[in-house]
Length: 566
Image (cartoon, rainbow, N blue to C red; front, side):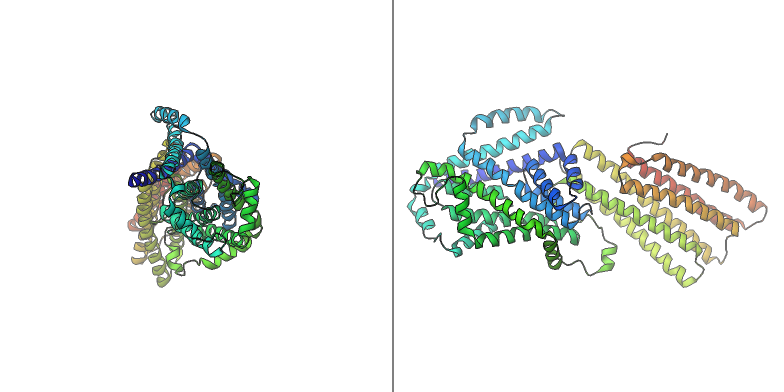
């Protein structure tokens, strides 16, 4: 019989973790864009950052989701490290709402709510416009159902009459700091393993409610959960840049510092929390049933008091925490590798929030486009070089950029394909399709830059030169082409709502008209023997390649704006 109860408990925990995950993901999909905007915009100072983290975590019911989102934002350059630390502090306060929900589940019979939620949820899941609401209802129903099952499993275990279990927990001296540290470590390790502080909190509540686990040891487990839950963000940051790894480390440092000072004031602090909710730790004034009802509330109250107090104390020391994590996490020493690696996305990134992964990919595309414009700048410089060794060095650099361009297209496309395997909103799917088109066109711009460089290299090898007029026309075409690239980068780096596409289309028309004008003039100049046919061919190759490049730029603009040229 005890084996069946054991499987009932672990099955309930699995249901609890799944319910939390389903509920959190549904909430993120329902309000994903708004939450990302809030997280990115409402962090002007440490206090707004803290309130933002608290609000977002309460909204998505997952501090892990908020911290992973925050790490992703730091990785994408949307948040500074100090802003991220304040958001993480707020996330720690927001996550305490979960403990209150669970304490409600242990004190109120929720079966009357669970079954209607399942019924309504299944109908909404098959509705296209309301499917995320259905996912949310299913998630919260699973969460409450798991708490009902855990509560009944705990009652079936009858731990309060199990002398072996009572004797085991009684063997620990609850007045010893060594015992508290042992249980704190156990809480940390279990949370790191199961990657869910909610599951460990549920077990803690069950054991305390049964009367076998003293409140001091239960609170030690809760403190351990606070440290263990930071593992998710640190794992998510493994493939990220130094600033993102520091943001994840700040979450760990913040919680460790909080645990250390609470350990110093452990018994007075716990007794103060108990007195707030009317609970006697000695158990002299309460019956067994009253204790069972009060203990979940005590644990939730401690969780809240601990995180709120810790935040109120440490929010004034954000600059010092920032210096500490910068000292702990050093940037990569290999600068050459840093220059030519993907800056915002990596193979080791844990994509718990695919919509944020899309945002990181957008930043990577912006970086890709900026790199291509630098490549075009090298091509412009190559045209002016006469020294052979300098020419060869710059030409080799352009070749290297062409190889990097090919690699970036492949890596970003692979990353987007991985993200697209997840369950995404229709809006995000459309973004991914547009982004795949963008990287194809940007890579084509790189090809055009390389083709121009090859033509200039051929001219250099033939020991021939353009006339002064040809140089003047090429430079003018280069100027128009660079303007079009600049406009493209303005769009990719900013908001499309404030971008004027007419400017890009006008530049493209200028490039097309100028190409046609130069093409006609080139025939006349060759007939007039102003230069050789071979030089005229190379000259028009450069002009035509610039015109192609302008078309690729317009394709990128159309992909980002979701429009077609009229």
